[in-house]
Picture (cartoon, rainbow, N blue to C red):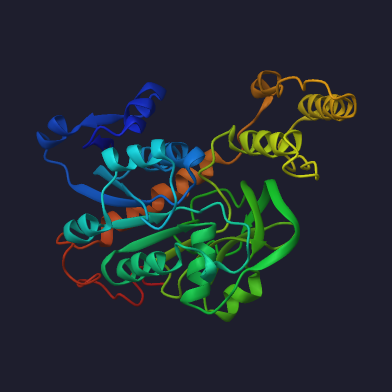
Length: 355
């Protein structure tokens, strides 16, 4: 069922142009269909703020349960913002106090662009703990993406992420290792997931915390999808299944531009398993032109995005939509109608799915 444009967030109209079904709040009010209210704590930096909105809104909008989805974006005041981004937030986002007052059926917490391993030193650390702890008590299920997963593993389970020798980024093959869990029971046993991170929490750390690992990398065993011990209250993504087809290309372009502007002396490697043979050749040729321009002091030509875009393939979106759709469907089944009541008063909060 559709997303409800209950405010004038620009992402609603952009998704509607893509073909995602979006209802006006007036039309939604006229229909006798149950509402689900989903919070979106968006911690991404300014350049990715609106793209991240659309990515998660799209996944929610592609879900199948018979419900109308009201998505409530908010962020943390501690995160520094440009004037433009802050204006967008002031106009379209809600405050955490408003979120707490109205209640939520579910919460999604995005990642953030932080390279350092020790998250407790970040400005968002304490505010993030406050949101996550509130949701743990009051929200049926919380979905954590990438850095949010690392943060919750740290402050709730004492498992700190570790800096890797090199950045893990690209599109990687994964396999379901707990097919009996409803989140993955109806998806392909093998599927792709994008990753983009310098830090990792390893399988043995998930196991030490008593978490349930559902999906891991085929080659390195890297955990992509796991849950809290009860199987549902907290869902952990370490990859980025929400990514658009072009997301890794834009990250690569950003990193290359940092090299061009001499903000780094290390030329970024290409994301793995993402570019085909033609695109790889284009990017290698472009790097050669950059190196010659640096030596000669000449102007560097524009990043050849237009040559690569038609050749990019998305091998993860269907599975991502299926997993998120199942997550929302389970929330629909078990959430209490009165969201202001304690967590799951009518089901076993320690094992809501009977696993």
